[in-house]
Image (cartoon, rainbow, N blue to C red):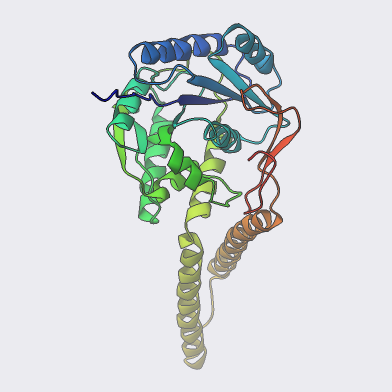
Length: 340
């Protein structure tokens, strides 16, 4: 009679953090409790952990991570040498976790995403799905302005041909092989919620209700949200450039019509009046030109960042079992970095 050996998947929960000292103790409690439950239910391996990525915090976030790491084998951490941004910090955790994990769940530290949904993620992973997206059922906890602008953003992205999941942020599960293929992407301008669907592996969705922030302040004020949205649009679509081109043709056609009108009026001896409309026309065309130049400059700036191949992040300290004492970097090129 054959003896069947059951191998449970190693799960790592990656949590990017920036100045999260107020909420971190509760985050650690909820995520470690979830891990212990999944381990006891024989859904994941006993070596599963939570990986906190400190994105250059200025408060006691890293000190707390070190303290929790010393008191619990379930807690590990990475400390970035500087603030690299949410997407780069998340990628740092994902790339580190993929080296020793079978699947990775990414979640923000603010506990707005429902941690109990992680169990459903794991169930879907056992069913054969490589990517499981956490989708918000509604936006009742958002302000009216944030709800309208967020919905408008998703509609705009879809109309531009960018495949992203409606009401999905960065709460998802990814298998090891999807992360290995994600590493092949060389973008410096990261927009992970647009990059992950491009992988094309079997995927599904899990719906949940988003909660209020447990403690602390939001790290995404209006300015950052608008910048993030604009970055996502320009990183995945050239439609804005094409729109400028079409608008240029339309303005050229209008100028030809206006020129013919002026010539005919001159021939017929009509007096040219309306200096106000003339000035407004000049200002309008001038504004359109500046807008077009700014948009083109934005794309050129992205190209400038891409061709420099600078590291997306530098890891100062590594508390994982595979961590090393020397400095680690990740580059977006095909060159092998010291973190791999």
